[in-house]
Length: 305
Ligand code: PSU
Ligand code: MN
Image (cartoon, rainbow, N blue to C red; front, side):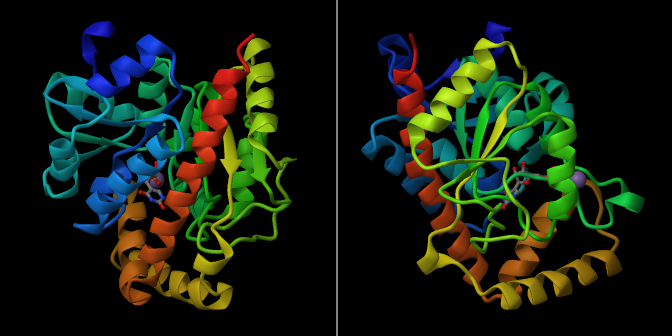
C-alpha cells in the first residue's frame, strides 16, 4: 500500500515530529468552487491551519500517487484544470492505475487520510441523501465512508440541496455520531440552523477529541460528523437561499443531471442565482471550519495517553 502514498516535505516533517495534521479535500477546489477563488481559498485555509498550530495536508491523486500535502503549483493545477476527475471511493483504483489527476471527495479523502494515519479532516459540506432519493437512489458515498472509516469530518452541516432529515436518518442507521459544535441543531451550511437536532453537543475541542479517542479505543469503526455552524455575519437569509435552491433543483431535474454531476451542478447554479453570495458564504464557513478543526486536531494529539 505504501508505494501509492507520497507526502509533502511539510507533512513528512510533521509526522516525524508528531505535530498535529489536518486533512483537506480537493474536490472542493476542482469541482466545488470557481477559479481563481478556489485556489485562493485553498491557500488561505492551509494558512489558517498553520497559524493555529497544525499542518495542512490537502489530498489529491497525481500521476499514480495519492498525494498527502500539495505544493502551491499543485493547488493551482487542481484549481485551474478542466481535466481533473472527481474521485470518490469507486474511482481510486482506476484513476491511480491510469495515472490521472483526481480531486478527492469527502469519501476518498477520508480513505486516503486513514491510510496516512490522519484522523481529523476539515471541509465545507458533506454529501448526503439527495432530495427525491426515494426514486433516484442518489445517496452520496460520503455517508457509507463515514460508517466505516476512522476519520472525523469537520463541516458546516448538510446543505438543503440535500434531504437533511433523511441524511440524519441514514447516519443514525450507520451509527455515525453527529456532533454539534456550539449548537443544538444541525447547521444547514449557508444558514446556522435546521429543524433537525444533533446527537451530541460539544462546546470545546477537548470534548470532541475525547469522544473520538474513546470511540476508536473501543474499536468502534467509522467516522464522525462535527457540525460547526457558519459564523452569524456570513450566514445567508434562510428564505432567500431556500428559494434559490428550489429553483436550482428544478433546473437540475429539467436538464436530467445525475450521478456525480449533481452536487457540482447545484453548487454552480446556486452561486449564479445568488450572484456569488453563496460562494462568499461557502468560503467563510470553510475558513471557520479550518480554525475549529485545527483546535480539535491539537486536542486530539494531546489526548494520546
Ligand atoms: N458540498 C460542498 N462542496 C463540495 C462538495 C460538497 O459544499 O465541493 C463535494 C465534496 O467533495 C463531497 C462531494 O464529498 O461534493 C459529494 O458529491 P456526491 O454528492 O456526488 O457524493
Ligand atoms: Mn450522488
